Length: 336
Image (spheres, rainbow, N blue to C red):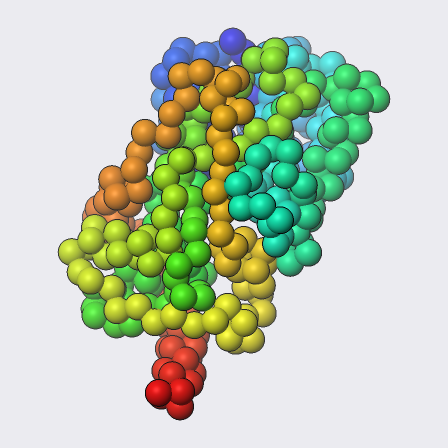
């Protein structure tokens, strides 16, 4: 199987890249080469910027791929460019969308691929919806062989899933827990959430590659394990060997201090989600999300503790969290 991955070294895509390389696929990566040294020698590299359409057209002029996957498309003009580039160059084009595109607020908590797409809170999600619309229209018009995949909250060893992370990642929250400082969860922590390890996502995704039955279809690929945010933080604390000191604050209170969080919170994490994965299991019968969060987050925490490059300080994050906690605790005192 001959594959082209555009990007291929991110949080989600790295696990897919490594899996496909281990399966012996004829795998090409098109990227700027920043992380390619972390990959096995049997992967071929096309060095370039996907936004340089003319250069990319030259790079692929002698190639035809069983599947092309673009991990770094976010706007309709980018997918329109890919249609021009790959219309005659692949038997399958896979677009990475997002599960945050699903209806907000949900009319029914159990999400299937037929759940309507609408997110009035997050421009990122709205752009992904527009991308899907462009691709679906092209499929209907010309038969451009699309498959749409919608990841939800997917993590690996470089990211500990949290309610509100810092600008540089998870480290500030882990540090606060280890130092016995208070940490913040939106709402009352009882909303339901689904976390998927990237290696599980990769196993489901690989089954869609060069899968004729997946053409014209959309999928989400998630774990079946459902946790509350309180349980998530308890398991992060357990991995660190501490009991987190949790403060809950209304999402509105948090957003008033940080309006940029309206998308990630109101447009995503503040909503309870449960995903029906029966479709991906029908198309990829051996797919199972085998990594329980307790196991996966322990691996992530251990990696953080032994990797200084991930331990980035973020004073602005601490100031913000302390301010929100102070406001909430003062409000709690007035109500007591």
